[in-house]
Length: 124
Image 1 (tube, one colour):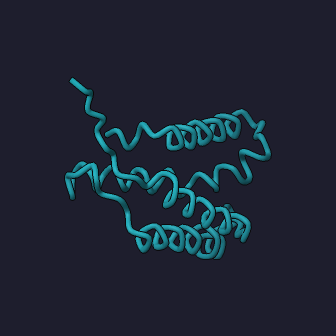
Image 2 (image 1 turned 90 degrees about the horizontal axis):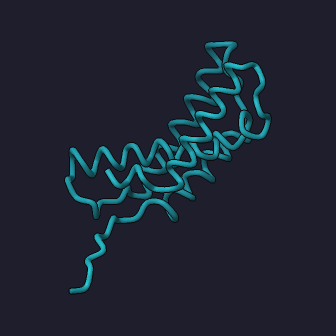
């Protein structure tokens, strides 16, 4: 569960909460509402997936997501939210900047967040 205590994961969740609250209050903050939440989408989703894998599937804190799995997540989100959903619903708008931010978030997750959890043993 320490995977979900990563400060970057927590920051992404806090930003998402800010976006949701400000939308509900009809006072969205443009930079948060438009782009920062997209940049944090992959790190948050991939962290949840990594935690699930570590706890229920692999059962090891040393497990990390492969580059292919992170790339799949990026492509999947870009296709669904920037191409397919805008085609079938007026509620969604396709934006290639968002897709680019998914890529940035994917790289950030893979190179910064996607690390094994190593226990710190105290010296006796």
